Image (cartoon, rainbow, N blue to C red):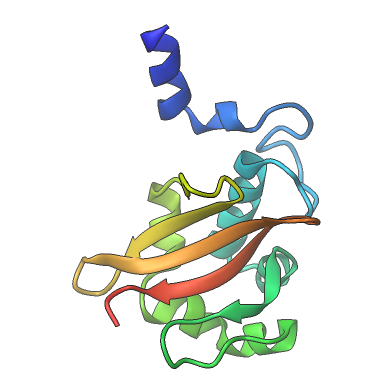
Length: 143
C-alpha cells in the first residue's frame, strides 16, 4: 500500500485519469484533468505559443501587488514577457516543476518558480472553472 502511494506521488502521469492521454496530440483547452491541463499549458509556455496560453487563461488574470491585471487576450500578448519572462523564466521553471494542489481547495493549484536571486517566490496560480482548468493569477510573494 505504501509503495502504491509513493508511486502516485512520484508519477504525475497517474493524475491524468481516463480520456486524453498526455503526449498524444493536442488536448482541448477545457480539459478537465489537472495532469493533461498542466502538460498542455507547460508545453505552450515552453514553446512560446501565446495563443494556447491565452486559451488556457481566465481573464482578468490577477497580478502581484499594485500591478494592473491583464483583461484580455490582446493584453496578454502585449504583456507576455512581463508574465512569463520578467520575474522568472517560466519556460525553464515549468520543465522542472510539478503542480502543487491547494490542500484547502482541490480546485486550485500553483507552481512556484525562482526569481533572479533563486528564491521561489514567483507563483503561477491556476483554478478549475466550469470550463476546465485555467491560469488565473501571477503572484510574487517577495513584493
